[in-house]
Length: 118
Image (cartoon, rainbow, N blue to C red; front, top):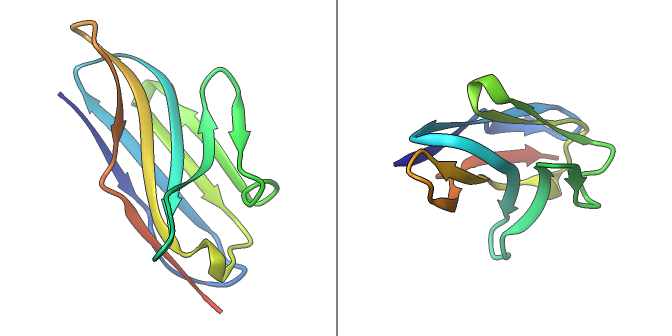
């Protein structure tokens, strides 16, 4: 099977930075797409950024967040700068993966908490 494991969350002051990581492991043939979503308390999960054929960002992330991938390590990163209290959320990694047995599915990580204090 496939697992996504996030790390890098924590508590940071407004204006600070954090770097999230998400490593995929298991029976992976190819990763088509990796992305970050987030869910703030009492709100729906929302898209943050993605890296596939192209790189895309939510308006709230543009200019402050950068998504990058290390394909050799099956890992995606999210560099978050100029953090704001409204960035406080659980951040989830998402990936579309083609497994070694030919199945293609989307997978989610368990989430990592980011808290930005004012």
